[in-house]
Structure formats: structure tokens, C-alpha cells
Image (cartoon, rainbow, N blue to C red; front, side, top):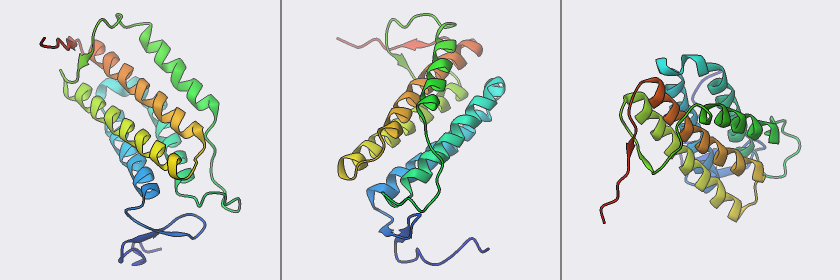
Length: 182
């Protein structure tokens, strides 16, 4: 199988189920951003500070492929077999958030991203996740998607924020509180 098909040379791509869309279509942008998120998450998984979290991060990457598959399928097409995203996937993120949060000091202000390359990378991943969430919400406004996709991406961005705080703690990096100038 060749990697190039030449079918997209004029700016279109095919969804699972055969429908062709412009590569600039909101649906393509949404699942493309989920793919970008997955790539950044792979970088975050490869950080030494996350060695003990590789399994959960791999699980999340798998779920992101699931979300991409759902978004890349012609809506309503029941002939194409795609994996499912379930409420249990959201619950897993919540449990992981709670485990980390139990070990962290309470937040008293917003925290500025940074302090260590791994923490900064985590915040980049978090913001890409938020962008993916916004695009899926915009797509939902045009053409309804299963709300579990939005819920999962929302919870994932929460997970990533707490993960950044946890990495800072494990790396002995002091969080920088935001002190608004008044």
C-alpha cells in the first residue's frame, strides 16, 4: 500500500463512508486538531517525569484515536465499524485527576505556565486540547456530534492542567502564581 493516493491533490479528503470534503472543512479541522493533540501528548508521554504515567497516557492517546475515528466518519453511517467512547473513559480521567489532586496543595490563584520544559510542554498540550474542544463544539453547532466527545475533551484538559501541576511538584519546580497588576 502506498502512502500517497493523490486523491487529495485538489484540496479534498474522504471521510470513512466515502463522502468527500474540503480539507478546510470544520470536521476535518476538528479531527486534525485531535490528531495534533495526540502527537503533542506523545511528546509529553516521552518526558522522563511521566515514566510512571506511560500507561494512562497511552490509554488517553488510544481514546483520542477513537475520537478522531468518530469525527472522520460520515454522520449516521452505520456500515463503518468505529470504536466507541464511553462514560467510563471520562470517569477514568476523573479518577486520575482526583489521585493527583489529593497530592497537590490547594490552588489559591491562577498559575502561569512554565518553570520546566516538561511542564511548559504540558501546558501546550492542554491548550491544544482546549482548541480541539472548541472545534468539536463548533462542529456540533453545525452538525450534531455525540456529546461524550465534548465531555471527554473538556475533562482531558482538566486532567492535563492537574498533570502540569503534578509534574511541577515532582520536578521540585515552584509554581508561579499570576498576580494581576491592578
